[in-house]
Amino acid sequence: MSSSMLFGPQNLPLPPKGLTFNKSCLHGTNLSFPRSNLIGTSYDLGSKTKMKTKTLIATKCSVSVPRPVSQPRFIQHKKEAFWFYRFLSIVYDHVINPGHWTEDMRDDALEPADLNSRDLIVVDVGGGTGFTTLGIVEHVDAKNVTILDQSPHQLAKAKEKEGLKECRIIEGDAEDLPFETDYADRYVSAGSIEYWPDPQRGIKEAYRVIKKGGKACLIGPVYPTFWLSRFFADMWMLFPKEEEYIEWFEKAGFKDVKIKRIGPQWYRGVRRHGLIMGCSVTGVKPTSGDSPLQLGPKVEDVEKPVNPFVFLIRFLLGASAGVYYVLVPVYMWLKDQIVPKGQPI
Image (tube, rainbow, N blue to C red):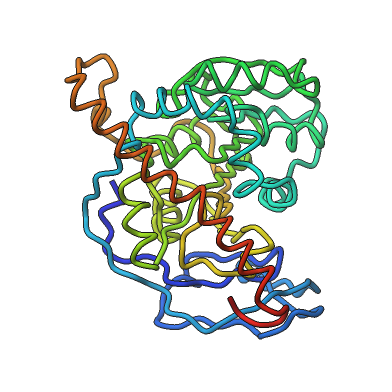
């Protein structure tokens, strides 16, 4: 997998809303943005389009940070993730979303997906409780949207939401989607890639199921640069680097690959702790058919027996590491309340 890459993003500040990056923007030693908390000028670096946006604190930063080739990532496996969400589903909408995945962030992250017609066919992969799907059906008729997740407990929450009653809701595997090739106009996946044993395979499937000219939008975490946050991130699940997202998309065959940074407003652009919902990556499918990328067998066989003792230890260690990322947004919120506006935190 491309997770073996040795270099990733450093403490990159949250850019002005709408600022996106293509591959060439992520290489180099330093990156800086204008320091401002007023109306500023930003650019879509992929299209060179000038736009007016509101900006937050921006600081000069290093683009890359090395990390070891392999990490434990105790919840980056389907079985552990299944049981993790068996319990997390009870409080997911009330505990996780307010700190990591707000409605404003969701709308910002979905904007590059170009949900510009009520008639679009959309698949929401790893849709969970349907929080992201609620943002999708604001632009697309619910009857045209399919929510897929491996967790029946998460999907049970989605089925309770009135706005999703007309959606098709099914259990399935993000790395082996039950859709025909060239099926959908849009592919959306938010907060799911961190649990995929093989992210490249999941993105290859995204390419396969959308039509020619269709767009995939994958929303996920970013790798932290602060040493303690890196430790807990590597213990918990996959936090990809921005370079990895782009490499996975391009290897799958996508064109016009762009990445847009997102984050809670009270982080004031700080990304050194990593963000569970930190970026929105999009790519366009240039031709019909399957991805040109050839892969071998799956890296994980969910039917293979596991040692229950080893499983329990992995699950407990991973879940414990995840608690750290429940506390981080609380810490950042408190800093936002204490530190005067206009100053970095």
